[in-house]
Each structure stands twice: as structure tokens, then as C-alpha cells.
Length: 427
Image (cartoon, rainbow, N blue to C red; front, side, top):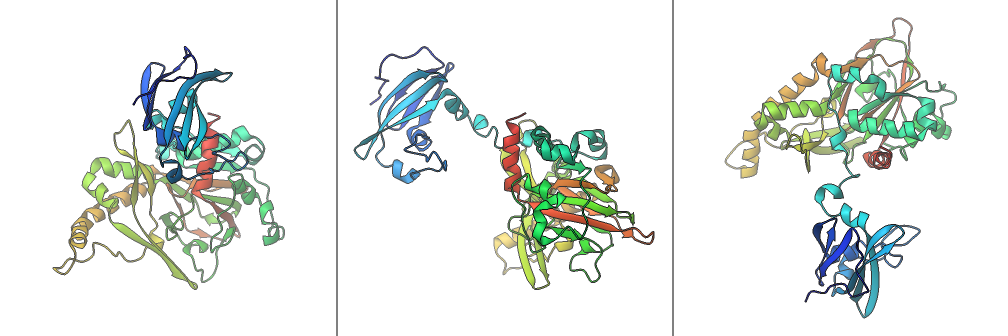
């Protein structure tokens, strides 16, 4: 049985009640009729009886409110903030009143509007050397502005989403005597990272020194050429951002190289869709089995998002996973026999497509035209998206009497995206 609103007169406003029953409530928003699930509306109620006003946490479960929920009455009311849909629910012998603003109803009226302010792939710019060089000024800022001006910080967060990296300059110059574990939060790179919330501690520590170490347990702690890669892909949840503060950088060589892996993935998708599909299917083993530690995880080279890019009609690229120094033996697609499962043999037939795509990927990222190279100045810090931007370092030598000391740390992708959503409110 359909029921129209019975609480007083209907307001001539942007919200108009169409009809309601126990399963759905239909309203007209600026001339467009939208039908909402009653369970959705009750579950989204933000009244003090539903959501704790101090913690903002729900006080009920979806399963509980879905049992025998009845729509007792509905109406549109007007207050100082505009039109509001008011619903009186009846359940377990009790009434409960929920209110929904036009802004809320409009936000949840379409799939596109629901994810607005949650994801920001549309703002990304994939780049090569010429594109990034043209826009260098927009991804550089000073330490003082980053730390003390929220507008500048929000801008840098947005630039990180757009390009995958930014640079902070004129950091205070610390000394080894002042940089102890006891005062870690006072280190300049810590202060940069803590603007996002907290530092992701790993088995390398809260912060890590990048120096030339004899018999190092990690190739990054040598003076050898370090190929393009991403960090900690053997973790279940690799860090979202990496920070590297150049404290000393006066050796010969040691230039840093950065590459946008997303543009490489898109290139393969356009040139060889079959190879690209294999790159999203064949898992790569990543592991760290050394120094009394054994980390292990499998992930494909390219991970696509569920959301579709309206311009290209392809799914957005969610992340790329590439780290040859920490790659273990492949475990799928490497054998073919009558004893194998159909899935294993299918993976085997796809393995050649994967290898072709991987060669295309490496040729693209190792082309200097697709790389941004610089000798990081002392007192500067690079911040980059570890799930998108590949980084490398050229071989260096201290034969000129120079020193090289970089201090690094990580921040989780969740903290980064939280700040990105906050920053988007100031666009």
C-alpha cells in the first residue's frame, strides 16, 4: 500500500515527496524522481539515537534495523538550512524519526555523485620528462610553507595525487648527534610525514638511513646502481608514500630517477591489449628472505580499479607493482602438463603474453624521455606515491671526498588519501 505524506502541508521546495511504502521512498529532487531503499535511508540515519555525537560511530547494526522495518509516515519540512525529508519509522514497538537534507539525498542519487570527494583519479596527469619538467614549479614548495600554511599543504597533497610526487625545499639541516631515536618526531623528515597523520614503521625502523654500508642487507644501502622499483611490495599493505630527505649529497653521481608507471601501463593497454590483460592476471612473487626476516606476497604488475574513466572508457589504473630486486620465483604459469589443473595450463598459455607485456613495460620506463632525473639538492625532500611512481638511483662514488646521506620514512596510503579528501574541500 502506497502512502503519501500526511504530516501537514507539502512545501513548494526542491524536495517533493512522491510516494512511500515499507520498501522504498520516492522523492522529486529539482524535477527528477529518485527512489531510495528504506533500509538504506534508515541505515544512513545520523540522529543522536543512531550515531554517537562524540565518536561519530553507529549505535546499531544494519542487520538489526532491517528486521520488520516499517515506514510509519513521511513528509517534507523546511528549516533554516533548506528542505528536509522527514521519515517516521516503526520497529519493535517503537517510533524513530530520521531527517535527510536535500544535499544528502542529492549526493546519494547517482553512482557518480556518491563517490565524489572519495576518489580523485580524474585529477591525475600521467607524465613523461617533458610534461613534468614543464610543471616543476607547481610541485615544489618550501619547508616553512608546507609546515605552517595549510593552503600550501593542501595544494601539495593535491599535486601528489596529480603527478605522484612533489618536492619540499630548504629543510633544517640536522646532524647525526641531534638525530636520535629519542627525538625522532623532531627530525625534519618526520615533521613532513606527520602532517599526514603518522609514520608507517617497518622492519627498517621508524626512519631509515640511506648510506653506503659494507655487506648491506639491502641494495639501496650500497653505492651500486639501483634499478627502478617500488618499496616493500612483499608487504600485504605496502606504504602509500615515501619521503627521502637529502641531508648530504655531494658525491659523484647518485642522481635520482623517477618514472610515472601509470603512463607505461596505459601505453601497453593501447598498444597490446592481450599483453596488458596478462599483466593484470599473472601474479609476481615479491619476497624479502634475509637477516632473519621472511616477507612474502604475490601481486600482478598492474591492478585496475572498478571505476571507469569516462574519457578513455577504460578502468582507472589503481596501482602498479614493480620491484625486480625483491622478486622471487614465479609460482603460476610456469609449467604445463596433463597433471596440471585447467587454470594452471591457462596461466601457462598466458605467460608468454605476460613476458611480452613486461618487456614493453621495461622498455618504456627505461627510456630517458619517460624519466625525470635530478641530483637532489641538500636540504630538499622528495615525497612520492609508492604505488605509482618508480624510483631509481645511479651509481655514485665518494672519490671526490663527498658524502651521501638520505633519511627516509613511509606513510600509509590510507593516511595520504584521508588528507587528500580533506584537501579536496578546499579546491
